[in-house]
Image (cartoon, rainbow, N blue to C red; front, side, top):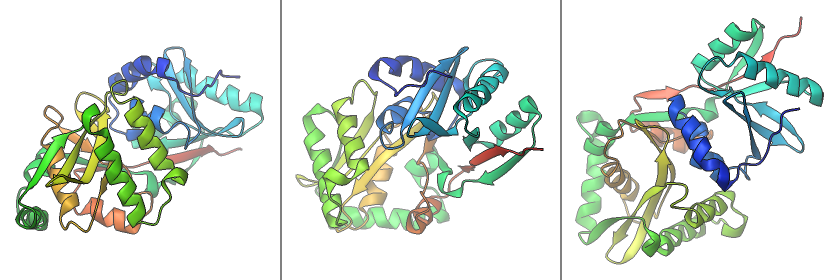
Length: 296
């Protein structure tokens, strides 16, 4: 069987090298995300023949394998996944496949597959220009939200996250939890954010905090997927401050100099979140699929 293990800090440098060179725009192959979310999603990794193999586990076995990521021909890595599943006595189910990976899987194996579109796991991709400039009529309402925020709260300021203001960022997150009747200690995203701040430099995170006078009212943070694409992993704001989400989104993207695209991740099947993400007019929605081999 393949030697899958839970990602550790010592794996981050190699993970980052493989993921960034792969060129994917997907948030699932962001090295920092793999580490931060390893516990919630029971992510395990394996390095095989120069490829990164990632799988989502239930108990001791994978319930979903990802397409191998690396340089060169992935045929041997795909074969290794099927051997692993066979040795475990489970079905090899591929998950989080892109359109290109779906086609490559069929080409390599020559199997027939049953594909299922994973609507809740699609990534929303935007251009840096659109989110920072908010040009044209389609962004009229966003510009209005920002203008209203600035009128209502003229003593606002935006600051990059550093060790000096980790506490302020967590204050926003705790207050957001309180406003949404969520117990932080039992909330997996809160645990992930806590670990992010504990390893902020190591994970090469970049984030910002929005203040009204001296009160932190919004926080956001993310990391690079590759040299062209930045991934926004966390964004929380206190909605009693009208326009706050539009404001922190806009201010933060202005700091992402050099990145052409912004990945604001999936909507998780939450209708309000889907509407919000669509209202920013994504330049692309990265489709996702699962694949099961059709037995003859």
